[in-house]
Image (cartoon, rainbow, N blue to C red; front, top):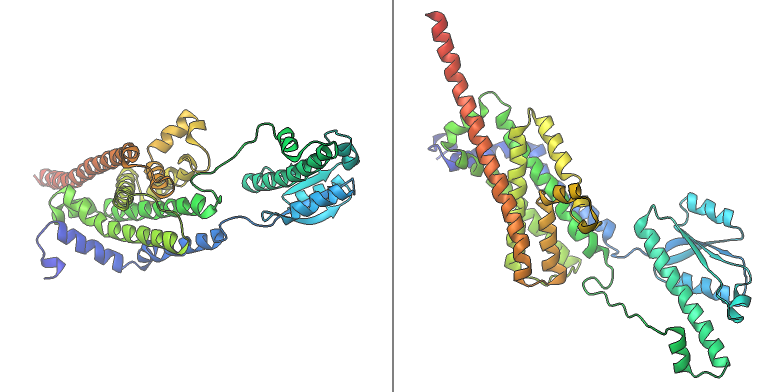
Length: 405
């Protein structure tokens, strides 16, 4: 039975939407190939997992054995590579400005002499904090290397005074600090960024396809009235139009996660069912939000622009790169209404932290509430626009009859 002979209802809208996708190569390309291409491109960027051999310039004004040992230890760290050794700070500054180096290590004159006298000379690190991540990595690596050399020199000086090794170690570090990272001990950027950027990119495509699907009906002559005639109810129209994109979005998200957890060995410590349900609700909430925006805007361009304004900066409001506790009230509210925020929070709980179900339930309820709100708004808006377009021909027909009379 062809779709033209199907009775009005869900199946007719479903098959009609599939035909719309098949006859629009650009839309079909945006559904599966483009998100996967972008995901693979991001995977290539983050494949090393950790930034390695970040360039550093060195200004050694001391030229002593200890200063050369510091330079060797800094260069030996996996995160940092000494690419230039210059004689003046102005030359090092040029390397920093020209982006040949992310940081400058300056060793002052008479450092070894002052150190052997028991004084505390200062080794200075100038880092480019515009690149916050790179500057932080370089600063941490250089500080660790310098502290190691300094502790070794201090230990030798104390032992030369007849102090035992154990006592000398206690004097060097009277209150030792043991840092034990729990959920990403290797500081792997695949765990930190790739696993969160991938759903963020997919969110844009999910919302955009929902916008295009409903804008096509909303902004074509009698499109919503025709949709009501084919479906009979707003609920059937919404389900028939969105369900093909739901299946595709779920497939792409699952495929990305399979690659992430198998090929890139990302951690998964949670419940598979909870994790899948979280992703499914995320897709439905994004679709409902996108379709609602399409019916709210005056044209397709405006709908896409409104959608981009809402979801494009959502990664910044989700609390991944900047903690939500430190955001302004406006930023916290903005993040709270976007489905990406609870989705990423629960995703992190279920992949890295392995949080028990009772800790994830409030986040799931948050995402489910968003789904209910956006779905309700979409149903109300769909019903309203269908009623308006159905009433307009009747009004026009009555006006025409009155004119003839």
